[in-house]
Image (cartoon, rainbow, N blue to C red; front, top):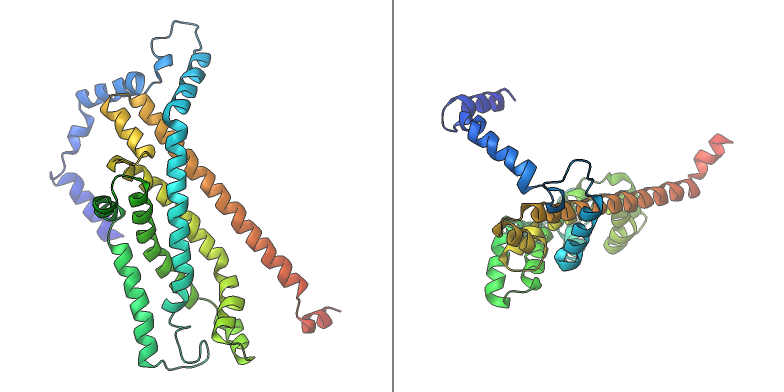
Amino acid sequence: MIALLLLGLYSWFSGQIQVAELFTIRRASNLKRFLTQDAMPKPLRNLAEGESGFAALMQWSSDLWNDFGLLALTTTFWISILAMVLAGAYAMLTSPLGARTLMHEDPFVGAQRGLPWRIASASVRGMAIFLRAIPEYIWAFLLISMLGPSAWPAVLALAIHNAGIMSRLGADTIENLPPQSLRALRLLGGTRSQVVIGGVFSMVLPRFLLFFFYRFETCVREATILGMLGVFSLGYWVDDSRSRGRYDEMLYLIALGALLVLLADLVSWFARSLVRDAGTSTNTKFKDPAESSRGD
């Protein structure tokens, strides 16, 4: 922390970045013009004293929504959700294969791992690193040259990148699970697949949902940026509004993207709450008989 603080102070006073340029009169004038004119919705500019402009603002917002707001928002949503469904499916299949506690001759019980199991888990984890190492924008740029300007380059670019992230996070989550109950399930005769389906998946589901919806929010933001490559998402219309100097429309579209992220966060909270409540009720229903007798 001290080193970071010193580096920050050095960058401020070293002269490499001209900090004083940020506080010039010209920049203050530009900021004032942007806030009072450019970013102000068109119906609210030059209002006479006493006018509210609310009805005109609602009409302006409705026109933007009907012209391209709804199309941009729904396209961004479907690109993001389809990409995350593909990435989530890949992660569900590969996360157990990348978990070193599962890729073992005797999962959660044995102490030593053979070389084939080590190679298998390392290969899955290495593929996850490769998929997430290349940014979404590069994947989309490559895919557009093969598939042409459509929504699919954006979908596949986001899916590939997030598949690597979700796969690695899922594998690490499985490795960090408390091993006691999974070891007991294995010692009771459970097969590897039974341990995964009956124990691992139920334990990692809340964390997996958290990662899923977090990456979905990221997909919304990235799909907005990828729209600048020609996909009719929010980014395409944001870039179009900026190029025409209509910053009020640009901010309107940015607000739609923020609203979509907020809704995704609410859905994430609700879904994880349902999982937690289901887990609590299950634990209460199947209480340890020994504990019940002690309580009696």
